[in-house]
Amino acid sequence: MALMSPLDAAFLLPETRDQPMHVGSLQLYTKPSGAGKDFLQDAFQALLEVDEIAPLFRKRAYRSWSTAGQWAWQEDTDIDLEHHVRHSALPRPGRIRELLALASRLHSTLLDRQRPLWEMHLIEGLNDDRFAVYFKVHHAMLDGVSGLRLMQAVLSKDPDDTTLRAPYMPYEPKRRSEGGSSPIAALGGLAKGALDEVMALGPGLMRAGEKLIREQAAALPIQAPRTILNGSITGSRRFAAESWPLDRLKAVGAASGASLNDVVLAMCSGALRLYLQELAALPDSPLIAMVPVSLRGVNSEQTSGNNVGSILCNLATDEPDPAARLAKIQESMNDGKAAMAAMSPLQVMAVSAVSMAPIALGTMYGVHKLLPPPFNVTISNVPGPRQKLYMGGATLDEFYPLSIPTVGQALNITVTSYVDRMDFGLTGCRRNVPHLQRLLTHLETSLGALEMSQAA
Image (cartoon, rainbow, N blue to C red; front, side):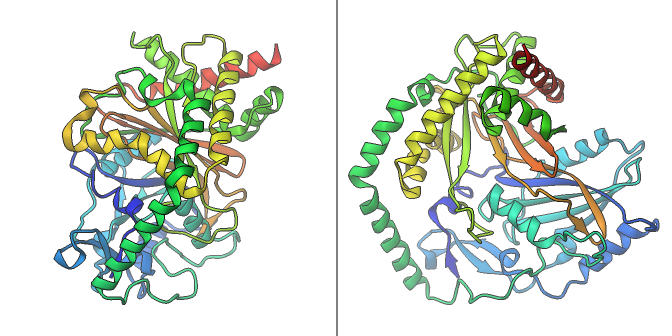
């Protein structure tokens, strides 16, 4: 048994039926040349016959008197793969529309806490003879960066490699178990770690917090306006997805001096502005986005757990001019990065937790109904693979991330780059974010407006 880190456990504590706390991905594949009609059925059977499961996917969330009520990981020695790995087919006519509807339903259901917190669904019936894989895993186990690194580790870069691999299969040499220590020893380690963290924060955190407040004055939590995106939510989800050529976004960035992430934020800002205008719900004050930032080093081999901070970004949705909106977003992000650069990763996580606290409190006590939202929307950009990947000889064409709407935050936009595309995944509460798919049209309109503003 190994106790969870406080950050990992924080994704279990606020989970309710209305607020599932898992993340996922929807992957579209082209079958290998010459593959028969039973290709996916054969792959499904092979995946069920796997003898060894990677340690990460044997972990089950657990707490009791022996852990003093703290969440811990316990190894599940009797995994039922037929529960975790499933085979589905789309109804006719098998369009992307039907696929997204199925992904929406699958993403709405809670993972079973009596088992390891993950599921893999193989989906056939697409009208272009492709197939899809929907994979979901609890956020307590993986964050976006570690999930992508895991995917890259198990998929092949060789189109002729027909070895079938899945995320739950071992993909690296076995390491010494994280567990093995007694609960008392584990609790002692947790107490010492907590004490070390408190000592590390001290005056440095105060100075860093003051700098953050000063340099991000335009994006303080108290300044986020209340919108239709910031009410109570249900557990029912709607998912929309689309891809854009990476070169289009890079061209806007090169012409404006903005980063690729700034352009992504500006695309989303313009789309949200149009979407809320369409619903007569655009506030006079600019929307604020919470932008997760990975704290892992570039060379970090960590492929589990969470290691993330956040920046609050002024989306400038009150600004009608696309170029001026992009400039304000760039300025806001630069201020946030400068403030973050003055802090250690531990301090970044602590300061970021301040803006996240109302979400946890809102889940338990309904605080979101009384206080202004800390931010209006989460927009995350996770760099993905730069070359084609393959699963059992099948080509991975598109990779769409699904994330977590929370109480008071009914929409999450997550973006992943893959080869020469930017894949946008929009996950929203079905009740609070009407006509979510219209945001895809508005994203294209927003990108076109940015291109025209830079060409002028």
